[in-house]
Image (cartoon, rainbow, N blue to C red):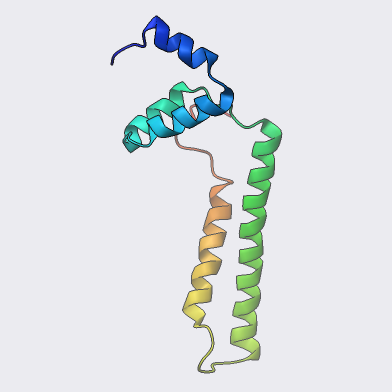
Length: 119
């Protein structure tokens, strides 16, 4: 890879933030996906704070809990109240939602196999 000359570096330094942003966008349009990942890794983007990461995890877990409870209610209503009727949501589809959400939530409780820390 060819390094920038002193004159080119000075031109970039003197450019306004908007001009530098436009230059970065134009330069990245011709990069491959692997090159874009490498540029992003070298750009030193900040990691989200622990508070932000916690909010994201709480939202994800809450969504799966809602799916789990909703699927359980639909299974109960569909099986015990409505009985076997045609035209409704098949029991297999709702059972799939229930077991997937339950498996995800159970997976959060399991120790990571790549974690070398001993309890």
